[in-house]
Amino acid sequence: MSLPTVAIVGRPNVGKSMLFNRIAGERISIVEDVEGVTRDRIYANANWLNRQFSIIDTGGIDDVDAPFMEQIKHQADIAITEADVIVFVVSAKEGVTDADEYVAKILYRTHKPVILAVNKVDNPEMRNDIYDFYALGLGDPYPVSSVHGIGTGDLLDKIIESLPIQTEEENPDRIKFSLIGRPNVGKSSLINAILGEERVIASPLAGTTRDAIDTTFTDAQGQEFTMIDTAGMRKSGKVYENTEKYSVMRAKRAIDRSDIVLMVINAEEGIREYDKRIAGFAHEAGKGIVILVNKWDTIKKDNHTMAQWETDIREQFQYIPYAPIVFVSALTKQRLHKLPDMIKQISQSQNTRIPSAVLNEVIMDAVAVNPTPTDKGKRLKIFYATQVSVKPPTFVIFVNEEELMHFSYLRFLENQIRKAFVFEGTPIHLIARRRK
Image (tube, rainbow, N blue to C red):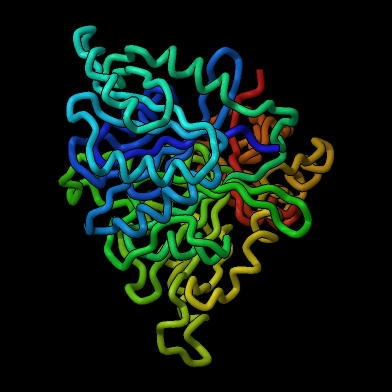
């Protein structure tokens, strides 16, 4: 069973994201004094009194017409449905508003534990301002200051008291993967198509998804996956707002948290220079990689189109020749059914361990085919090799002089290892080390 879940809800600009970050213990949700910055559901894990739980931040709910408001309400409604406990955040500075009463009416119908958190109580004198919130009919209000951390301990005590008892642990074999790419290449739509539900707000506006979002699902064979949607990544020179800057940072962080990344390219726009930069982040981090060419249904094709695309991708992404290429469509779900099995295969490749004896046979055969190089009359000698880690598979090759191991020969050895063993979709690292 998954961790118990706490949803943080409320009208816009009451400090939900700040409280979310305070409880999570790190800056996950974007915090700005602007309404509507949080649009999708944002997930994190939290711990209090040795009790772990999942926490969800949601967009501000209001009864007025505003950009994305209907979708934000829909996302908040899903979060409320998923939650075991709901924290309803209001603001002491503004008092009870019509929007607060609107949200309270929604929460009445859930029949779930609702904890009323009165935020922005930044000094003791303001505690007298919380009693008006009894009018919402949701029990005792808890005064907190998400900025200063005042009262969050009492709030967390109440959350823990209200959580259901956890009896099982989550699957340690779960595979984590993320979707990365420039803004508006269709990452959110792909997630919705894979999951079969509107998990993330999809919009034709570039940069709609600003936060990295986790979703867990299970395939027909019982394999669990955690899918991380990353915010659209822009060139540093085009990052004007703090929200965009944090989105780039968060996308890189999502890559670090992933085992495998799906690099999404927009077939309508073709390969851009920054696509290569983004894929480079994943390659340098040692992650498994799949290249997804999305919106494949929208372009004109003939018998040679796919082959031409593959040739172009291999030429543009020469540093990741191991990455499989899949032509997909979020709209028609073309080839999306292949992704879970492909991800599982790459995960197996990432965790493959080669016995030293077998590895050294391959290395010696490679040397017999292509003798080691020489430099100034001195020849490189390879004594033996061994695998030292996985994810990515990493091999240490012990030699007489590290300087004699030229990059091109190291690449030759990597290609021979790839021919002998299945390492599709994952980088492998070879390290030359002088034998002592």
